[in-house]
Length: 348
Image (cartoon, rainbow, N blue to C red; front, side, top):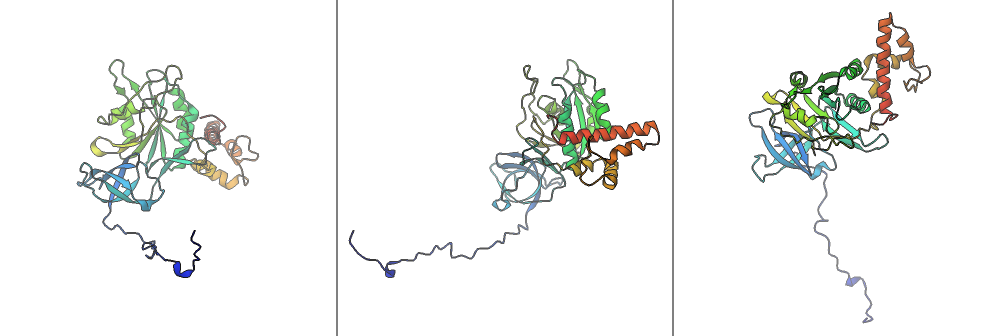
């Protein structure tokens, strides 16, 4: 302590040279950016197909540019990239733009979780892969996947595997009335060949299809049969829990032979929450029912079986003959089953 008294002359201003620069919100236009398709995401690195469907297409690796912020990119996204797009070992491009998504398949951890988990983007069709046995089919899980597909604006295809172990007739009769196409596959005894692939392929041609299902239902086996060079790992069902073990750790987009479509294989799921789905979007999947409900149901009608004055009940009774009445009743019951699944009244 010297006892010296300080005044203004002792102040030494040291302005920050960076702080003296004018700040701007302008971003580079990236006029040279090239279109690309995300085929796989792995810990912040994105595998892309740049200039897809052209003679110059090339597989590259890229990272997300800072200017994209917290925007999550997923398999199936169409993006634009700059930088090194040669695909040489060690090269790294930058994703600078995300193009508008046509569809977006989402789920939540459960029916109360507000956090949405995006699965894939820009898919046309959700293929719900379900084993008829080993493990046993879980219809509530199928219902939830159908709801998610309709909410995303996608069509739904139910693929029943292991038909050599159980009869598919009951599940076929349950889902065809709600507009879900059904295909059936089985395993050839002793040779490991998948039978029924031609019918499955006929539904995949010219489309981008995402496969979803529990672990152990044969999803990766199906992918390997459809795309011979896919080499997706396959597993077995746990004899104690009756559930499959996870064999795929990330979603990956694979091109079908002859370049006539894409399949996106996803990791096995144990639950499929629908907290993000609105009742109106579910009802919209049933065009005839939505029209009746919109025109005649009272405001705030839940359209559930116990909803008072729901116009759907009266519509069923207006069938011209017993056959029409039965068909209408089955369609309303199917819609209400999906509505029940969306509301979480049944465990997934």
